[in-house]
Length: 328
Ligand SMILES: O=C[C@H](O)COP(=O)(O)O
Image (cartoon, rainbow, N blue to C red; front, side, top):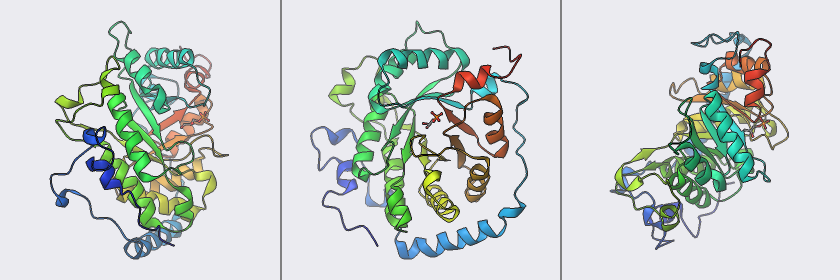
């Protein structure tokens, strides 16, 4: 069943016509031609079904390991650069977020992945000249987390604010129920809208609250395109639904498909990573992120060999230090 037409359209939020005066910072399209055409269920369903059939028909052949471009026999800076150092618990304190940032800087993790409310703190700590930097760690914000069940317009607003606060990657959760209802158009529209919100054109005016946060990046001076990782919550899906979600995410402009929130009763498995890698292989720019339950070095290497380009983990330090003689 298709979702009914919304009273407040996502594009109204994005164009600032609904939420003025705070919304003018949101992306504006120069013309209607700039907007990607929405996908309909009539259009998407046969494409998704054909993709499911194709991927499942050859799944048994898929046992090959990936050969990462770096040595995975021991922890290394290259491994650290694949890890999103994550703290998403609802009771995370500012002190714990500071420790997360210190650890990320020490090991050179790719990002600090936090809830949006902590992005200003993470950004200001990472951009503080007094913080010694071991690597290019960036702030990463989750969106619609952990249920994915907020409206598309809400996710867009949350994404835009997170970017203004300094987020440079976004991990959004899909509307899982819509996927399971086979309302692929609703899932596609949800992802595509957040991807558009994450592409901020030049000459945007920062929100007043952003201006009040020291260290807020000068979005008014430059455009920024923030990669969007799409969390499909594999623990709730059949293999067919995982493939459908990956196909839709890739079509809607995702940079990554990501397994799990870590709050949905399951996490990353080698089998799911192999399946997701294959399900997005037709769009070579789309990568795979393993997250949820990756607790040590061996598990981390296993998902990387299965095809994960990125690993999200609250156990980043244990991953780097759990191997005997790791040197960390
Ligand atoms: O998105 C990342 C996950 O929340 C991390 O889950 P984890 O705590 O099991 O490592």
